[in-house]
Length: 189
Image (cartoon, rainbow, N blue to C red; front, side, top):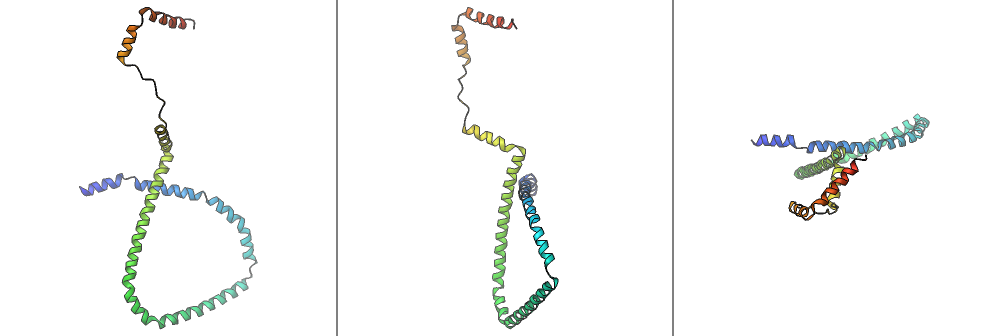
């Protein structure tokens, strides 16, 4: 039964759908920024293309060759340095391996918590977006406004006993002329 209950809960939980809606809403918000970026690139493109066209290929080749030689010298010196200190580093590595593993587990847990928080934020954003898309947000605002400003007080409606008592207190002929006036008012139409 527990598996059935878990499946039922999982299949009826709208949170993943809200998270997807929140992701879509966030993506739509970010996509609104794209035209401005494209316009910026379009404005800068002619200058950059002109700079590339005016560059001398031989100068670029010389600069790349020079940087490659410098990198080779640097790498060679670092390799020699690492090989020289390898024995002492192996001992330290053995001592620190467990510390690194624990740090990795801690970081994984931290990332899991951040992922859950982001998921929950996206679900909340999606729920608000779905309410906005449905028009439910306007209904909530109306409900809040009614709660804040209640309707003006109405006159209390008379009870049945009060109506009967007031009719008995009125004279009988006074009722008939009122009825005649309404009937007379209806005839001239």
